[in-house]
Amino acid sequence: MIDTASRIALVMMAIALLLNLWRLLRGPATADRIFALDTMYVNTLALLVLLGVWRGSPLYFEAGLVIAMLGFVGTVALCKFLLRGRIVE
Amino acid sequence: MSRLMPQPVISVALLVTWLLLNNGVSAALLVSGVVLAVGVPLFTQHFWPEYVRTVRLVPLVRLVGIVIHDIVIANLRMVVLILGPVSRLRPQFIVIPVSLNEPFAITLLASIISLTPGTVSANLSGDRRSLLVHDLNVEDPDTAVQRIKERYERPLMEIFE
Amino acid sequence: MVEIIVSFFLLAGAGFALIGSIGLARMPDFFTRLHGPTKATTLGVGGMLIASATHFSTGPGTSLHEVLVTMFLFMTAPVSAHLVSKAAMHLDGSFTEERRGGGDSTREDAD
Image (cartoon, rainbow over all chains, first blue to last red):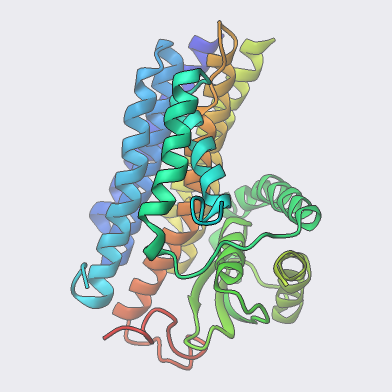
């Protein structure tokens, strides 16, 4: 049962990521692209957790943790760059 | 005691985070956790301009309940808005006057507004007195402002002031 | 029983994440696009993490480190949405100080 549910959920996550990618490529504003990238990070985290449950391995979780942190820091750095023109002040 | 543990709240939070991160409790983890919980606040003391204040617990628990309820229940309403026809949406900016004084409380208010469906906080004014909020579907701006002030700001005031 | 709970949360999580992404893709302007991902996607990942915590807690031992990521996400999602909207306003010239409700809290102490 979990196997079937995981397969369906995997397809849904793949569609979600493709929609994010479409927004990332299309824009139109830079802020749209940054936000699309941020959403992709969060969705990738969900995908990794899902893979962990499906394969029954807790190792995917560590990768998810790293992606969550990098995603947030990356978004903040990009936004600060847009706002100020530099990141470290 | 206060010199060894300048930030007791942060120390406890660090210990809990450490145990959660390692996904278990054992003697070795507890010892290393306590070392971190005491050491990290000591070394980062100068980065914290203010002490983390104690808060009132009963209103805090009630607010957490309200927020979780709102996130789950009203997200279902969001689904209808997102999947429904775009022309039916009435997006609009509303300005919420903030009466909270503590920066941390204002941060919490802005975060709660962003997490509860229909609204995203977009900008806080320079004097920290008004919050610009984007609402996805406004029927009446005044009721929307009143609802946020009653539901989220009042409990926050009870907790911090 | 546990299988049903895990499957339910997996599907609910994926559903919310998908709906958030649909919102990002089909909404007409930037600020309406902000709504889907900040809420629905965060809740979706939350559901997925509940499923994972339940799944790995049924065998020997418990698994609670999912709580950590859930809390991290619920803390960071509003912050990144706030920053992106600030950046969008900064780049879009039509947002004057007055339309923003008076100035910008991150600017006063800088420059």
